[in-house]
Length: 600
Image (tube, rainbow, N blue to C red):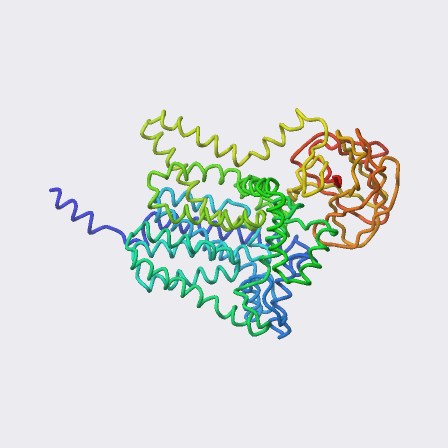
């Protein structure tokens, strides 16, 4: 009887492509596509820079490079950026005409494909339920939409990184050369978009030797994989040599980016050092070439080891922080362009916290998850080595989502099994995860309760006094129209009379050159602006007599331009004001990004 029933059930088994799971995945992918198409239509209507990206942005650079490739005027020097993205744009423009809408649409399709790859990775490493949770989370992670909707390489790089991991996992099941070739091509293409994936390659060897400990055979496979990667990259390297006579594997921006992320004035995010310092380094670069940047990083690490190590630790914290640090694009401002970004509400705070918990809970099966562990570790290392922004962190999100989903599935299973004590114990690693992801937010909220004076830190031979973290989250600012004023108070606890010099710094953004009037403790003077980049830092050298111990008042008056002054919402000391109707109104949250540097 049982055999007949089994035979009957077997006869009615549906093919895989008609199973319930496939229909659910297909439905979720359709939902992902619909949401993206709606978002893209909103951008087309509401974004004034939709067809021509703003000045001073990487979007405009990539767009212009693509046009130069098409008209044959592209430069005859080694690539400064990884070249894949602007060749991708050039190909799109060649086929469909110079239409950024089509480029964005293709990036949206890559985003949907990335969600599918996330599902397949989670299905391969964990189980069906975890995979379905993963695809759902990927659909409602807003930063995917944001980067797919602009002319930046992140959507392409995220797709290629995720594809690389998926293809590598196939090698574990079937380590044939025909499976190694597509994995090597995907890694090579990803490196042509952003080269930091190359530092992941040695970790692949570790993974191969552990999952299948056949040393000689695995070394041959790894060597073949490296050959495919290098062959994929080689057209770029050959072209760089032909135009310059120098060996440049992919691009030349590595040394300068390393210096931007590791110098006495570095904040952990992408910020240019003060002009006085950067001009000095530029002169050295003119004499020695790009190796001057590396020498300066080495000098900084050697002469200020405590500051250097502290900076690396700060970047580690920023990497896991819930804040999506803006660079070229502002997540909060884009929310005003489409309601889609208000419903795809999942952020790094939730995903990062759950992913760290999922990594801990999955350690029991560490061998099966090893490739994902190593990929997350290597990408974190390469990001922390330079600087932290949301767009540089986003390629790793597709690897964190499966672990976040596993944590949710694990809870469900333990509750279903009524193992409530085990669930309660998991609160301990979850608390650690939340503490790491929200460490900056928690510490910034508590600090003003116990410290009333302005914060003091060291940058090289200078002392920095201010009320902000030095990192703009990209969402809060005040707008000073012509003849409008804002005020910042700095409380200096130290005796400043013995210092050699003072420099006042403040962040700003303008759309055209103009003038600002500064009033510092009653001493007035003009400050001129010429740069119209997204966000700039102005520095003004002042005599020591300008400031004194105790409360100092700095007033900024816009004379003839509209100027944006960023607000760092990390700390709230209550020392920032905006003049409204003739009265000073204290900012309810955050502090104006105005600070002081003293030379010892």
